Length: 156
Image (cartoon, rainbow, N blue to C red):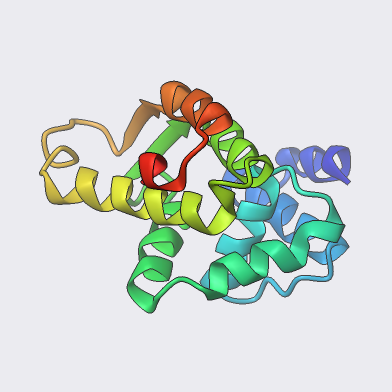
């Protein structure tokens, strides 16, 4: 599936190839992918490296967020860094995978913290100070902390 999508780079834009891959992954997990929100959830599926059997956990975590939090994540997860500002969270996959594995954190709590981080970066004007639409931000320390933290209140 991934190789088939990459072969389209000869005839399609990188953006369309990327989203074709995300949509293909969503289809293999029986997830819809027609709206931006559905594509954001599909992207989370890829980022978490979740097997199809964990789709329900992802959907439950997503649906538990309030509308503003979902909107912040939709904006973040569908930003391309070309036409809109994109925070490139290095180690985001590790952070999410560690959160899912750690019972005191969990996927939903990890999303809440991610939303706080996104809103903080946007609200503090950090994004406006940058010359590029792509802003790399390392989450290595957060990912490592998420793996070992033993208290939800300490994590939050």
